[in-house]
Image 1 (cartoon, rainbow, N blue to C red):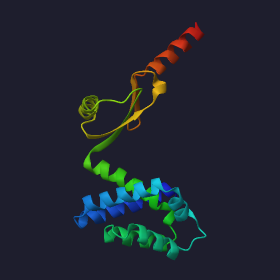
Image 2 (image 1 turned 45 degrees about the vertical axis):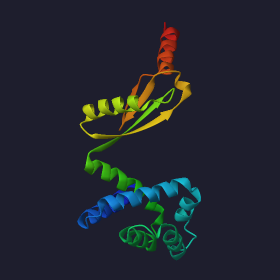
Image 3 (image 1 turned 135 degrees about the vertical axis):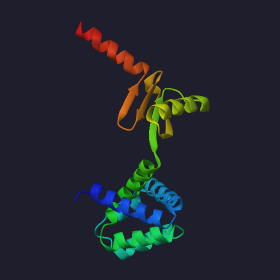
Image 4 (image 1 turned 90 degrees about the vertical axis):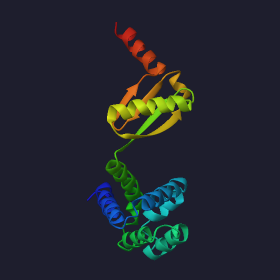
Length: 178
């Protein structure tokens, strides 16, 4: 079974357990904290993936770093690590957030623009995406000066490219072809 399949199953089990115990929001926040720490510390991810490091040592590291998290999460870390599957903890956390968003009707959108967007622009863009998808939108804004102007919007697996750089490339191809 692939890592993503295992992570997805673990994430669904954890989210179901959190819902049963009425602690879904707290668990989601703790999982988000775990994700951020692992993203910010590639060494931690390397430790979790390293088969040479004993499960007990990995568990000690996890407990010392995340001892303040919900006890359910610490128990989950313990079970997964003792089974020798600590390699999937990061992927499981990502899948947990994805499943949470799916169940709550939340969709992620990423807008990349040539210059920083104002808060009003972000609100307008989020409103348009909300109207189109009928879901709550988590909008992430990035800046890429190479776009020259305009923006690129990614929502799920769809992309809308309204950048000047893209338009120039299309014109360049049209001139080259004829």
